[in-house]
Every structure is written in structure tokens, then in C-alpha cells.
Image (tube, rainbow, N blue to C red):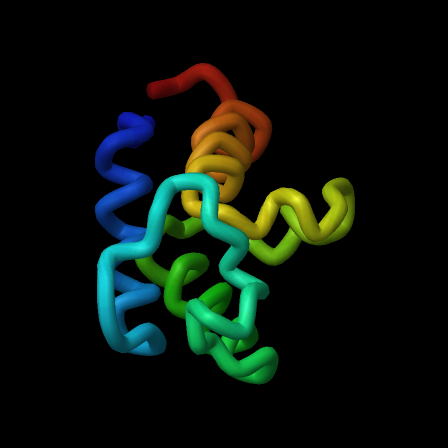
Length: 90
């Protein structure tokens, strides 16, 4: 089971391929135009996260609103889904 800090690092590393400019704040909406991520790029972001973390990260979107699209909320959601996908074998 990965720590939240590790998940955040993976998320930031993946996002860095799609974002130019300053560091993204923990609570900044990734959907905000000022962040600069094209909507289509979220397909690639979620694909990269799924490969890196070996989790069905796209399922986060099934049970959450757009409010989950911040670094803090995505990190928390990914951290919490580890138990349901991998059981308590960690």
C-alpha cells in the first residue's frame, strides 16, 4: 500500500507532462483553464496513473463529482481505493 505522499508525487509527476508553469496548489481545480490541461489530456493522465499505480483510477470518476479533480482530493481517493482493490494484504 502506497503512502499518500507517494501517491501525490506520482500524480504530480504525471501532471507535469501536461502542465506548464507554476506548481499546482493542493486545492486548485485541475479543470480550471488557468491550469492549462486540455480536457482530452485527462484520458492520458488517468491511463498513466493506472499503469503507474496498478489501480483502476478511472473508477474515481464514477462515484464523485468534479470536486474530486484537485491534487488533494485525487490523492485521497486513490489512497482510499487501495484497500478495496488490493484488500488488506499490504
